[in-house]
Length: 95
Image (cartoon, rainbow, N blue to C red):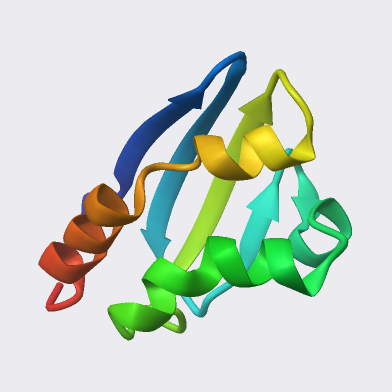
C-alpha cells in the first residue's frame, strides 16, 4: 500500500522551508528537532499552527519540515503561505 504524503516549499528572502505533511497524530518536527524547541515563543508557534487549527487538521497530520537560511522569524515566514497551506490541508482533510 502506498503511503500518502503532501509536499510544499515556501520562501522568504534568504529562507527556504520544505514541508512534508503525512497522516498522523499532529507531531511537528523541524530540522529533526521538536517543534517547541525550534520555535521558542508561543507567538511563533501559534503563527505556524494557525492554518492547521483553521482547517481543523491539527490532529490528523504529522509535519516534517526542513528550514534553512535567514533567522528564526524569516524561517517562520518561509513556511508555505497561509492560503496555500489552508487549501492543501482542506483538500486532504477528507483523506
